[in-house]
Length: 264
Image 1 (spheres, rainbow, N blue to C red):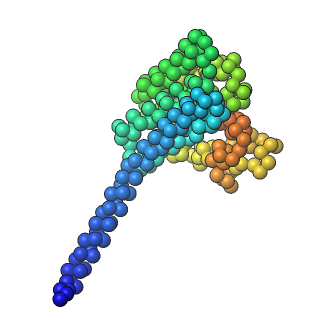
Image 2 (image 1 turned 45 degrees about the horizontal axis):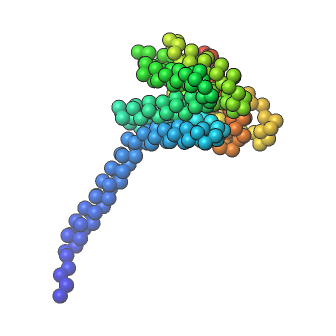
Image 3 (image 1 turned 180 degrees about the horizontal axis):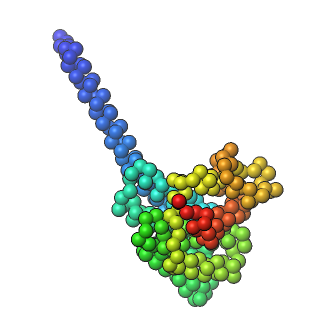
């Protein structure tokens, strides 16, 4: 003998199930929003660790590519955290640890320790990044004190690719970057994904020419070129061309921070 539940009971059970599913989806969505930036920071950390492994195995070009990718992730994580109102102490610690790994340790290994002096030089670079991360606060909202280490890292990794790992040029570039990072000058916060359209275009890379061999690199910075995803610069273009693009980008920020990159 079957006992049927009254219709009201069936509707009540269905409503509870629906509401529980809604609550579950809301919790998942809330968790994803709160941790989206942390995922980007962890991805940056993975890029740094992978770059270290590549360098130790003699795959220096892959190591440089991973550092460039970590640079893009680092620029994105802060923007995502602010847009989703998900800034937290944990996120700040993850970001600093990822930056130290990718832009400190991984980048310093590109300087190639061949003796005591070069090893000491590498330690000096890592310490400069450490000091920069510990004492970067200028007391002014959205202003850094000293060159942010991701830009120094991109300049070094791009120099490595373009010079074929020439130690002389790498060491000169590293000395200059150490001086800029430990400088007391102010640099605008790189809210590149939150301000003017042309900065977002620089981030995505602008239009990638069909025939990259005859491309004018300066034209790649032309404002408003959004015909193709700029991540193609990193994923589809030759590494040397990509490094020239990133050098122009980072040198412009290093040498003309307020004139070109002010958020005002």
